[in-house]
Image (tube, rainbow, N blue to C red):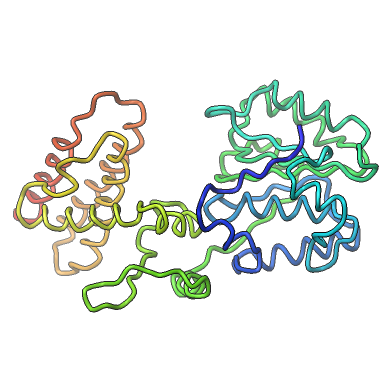
Length: 331
C-alpha cells in the first residue's frame, strides 16, 4: 500500500505545495524538522490541522522528512532515492489510509498494521499517514491501539485530523499532539497577496476581502481553490441575493434556482448574513437581536440535517427563512 498524495484537488495546488507559503504552519514544521535531524521525534503524532488549512500537505512533508536519507532543518532533500520514490508515488515504506466513504474501517487498519509489522523494504524507516483519523470507527480504533502502543522500531504514525475533538481519547493519549494557531484576516490577506492570485474587484475596483467566507469553505487552501473553480463567485452571488431578498421580501437571482447540491452553501451564507446583521445593527433591540441569532441557529441546524433529507424544495426553504427574518426586523 505505497503512499499516494491525497492533497486537495486544485489547479493552484502547485502554488501552496511549497510549505514555506503556509506561514501558520511554519513554526510546527521547523520544530518537527529539528526533531528529525536530532532523531528525537515521537513514534506517533496527532496532527490537529484541518485539510483546508494544510493538514494533508503537512502530513506529507513530515512523512517525506522522516524517510529522506539526508534530512536537514529545511526538511527532505528532494534528491535521494527515497524522495524520488515519494515523488513518483511509489515508496513501499510509506502507507496511506483515508476514509472509505464516511468511515475508516477495521479492515483498512488491520492491513496497515500488517504492513507496518514487516521489514522496511528500503531498509530504513516505515511511515503511516492516516487522514481524517477522527473517522476511525470503534473497531478500527481498537485495532490501531496496539500498534500505537508498540509500533516497532523505526516506525512513525501520523494521524491527521480535521476535528481533533472527535478523535477517541484512547487514541489521543498515545500520540504527541501538534497544534497550530489559525491565521487572522490580516495574515490571510498577506498570504494571498504573496501568492499573486488575482482577487475579484469590488465596485470601486479594489480587491475584495475574500476571507468573509472562509468559515464556509473550511480554510485558506479551500479558499484558494474556490477562487479557481468558481465556488467563491457562487457564494458571493448568494450573499448579494440574500441581502436583496431581505429588502424586497422574496428570493430571486441565484436563490430562486439553487439546487439540492448547492442549498447548504446558500444557507451557510445566510447564516453569516444574519450574524453580520446583528453586528452591524447595534441599535436593534436586544430582544430582536436574540431572535435573529436564534433564527441563525435554526439555519445552521437545517444545514446539518439537509445531507439526509431527500427532495427538498430549495426555493421554498429560502423563501421561508426570508419571511421569518423580515417578520423579525419589521415587527
